Image 1 (tube, one colour):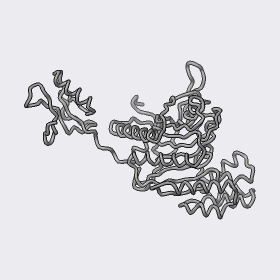
Image 2 (spheres, one colour):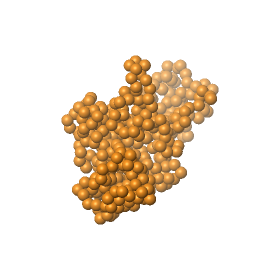
Image 3 (spheres, helix red, strand yellow):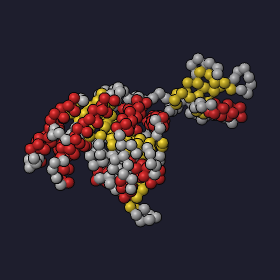
Image 4 (cartoon, one colour):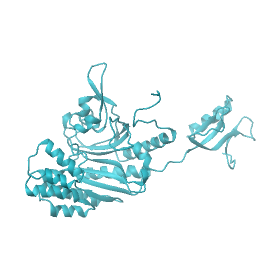
Length: 397
């Protein structure tokens, strides 16, 4: 095998895409800061138990493990930053009130969950700790929407669910963990035939509700249908009411509800949402999930602080593929030379924020990542001076 061949689903990021990703990263971090979120930078690897305790089997399977040569303990390369941010909130910040935290950095996955995905996403996220109300849920949804708008995504669709719906449906019965896992898988696949088999020994009302859940998806009217169809309970009605309130508050979004969507069930404790770019954007014109999040109030329990928590994350590498390329950076082309006045002119332009590309001898016509629409040339009216001229119209600056 050639030394330059990378592992499957690991790729270099070349100049045009890297520039776009970096511009998006800066704009998203600025957007989060504008909403009052503080930036944290957790490490790429740490002790495995800290990364995985309380996160469920799915994250364990996604995490690369290695042995620390200093301590002999097992380390993990993070597959998700949220457990680390929860640790920071619990042990390093240790605030009594609300903490709004954002982050952006690479995570590494042992496997992919869909074709063409990267095993090294660049994860951006924002989280609120310390507030259990719907206000925080709405703020996180609105921040995710604002970030995608800043990135240039249009025609967004918000899809919502709540894990407390299935909890309410199954509350009357005691199931083993394997039974519950099989039911969840069938619900996610909307496999009514399998659900009927799995629920054949359950009470009639529970069996009826389980088989009804897969068809409870669509617009907000699904919530009315669920209230009429499913066995009434305070927990069920609270979850449906919360979804209705959130759906009524979001602006400029197409809202859909899917009460059988159990992705991340072991992780989330309440509302779960995803933001999609509608058909016409993204790969092959297909609807593409760009951001996902929800409420995960148990995430800090293993660190001794079971604080309310809600947040979202997205992969900048996926996001950059879903938006239009940005124009090349406008730049000034300058000759290379040791002349003091030339070097001073270049330094002065760069200090003013201009991009100046000095052309090395013999490389005047190479293609690069900059759009040189101006050039630095000797000033014909003043010896030893330099002036910037438009390459097309030669307008002095």
